[in-house]
Length: 122
Image (cartoon, rainbow, N blue to C red; front, side, top):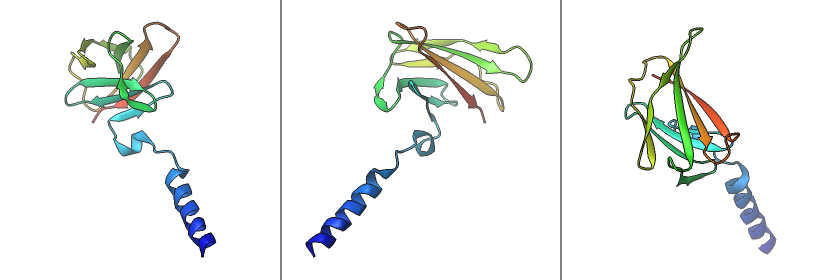
């Protein structure tokens, strides 16, 4: 009986810990990369940047730079003006409907630490 109880506990524990949770499936506004995670809401044009795997650790303009551009098929991409607002970043330009944008996050101290996210707009 003791063995059966222990066996059941081990099975439930392995199921609970077994698969890492994918942030992108939990919240479509979250885009997780290997270095950074961004939360982007097209309606508000706000971008929140955090460390990958640590969504509670938000990064402000003192830690990262954020660049954006509109992605046009074959044409030259148009840069988007992005400005820091407190612990977030805001896209100043109007966003193109039905197109895509690329958001690039760069670490201020180490310019080689950068990541680009492609977001298809509704």
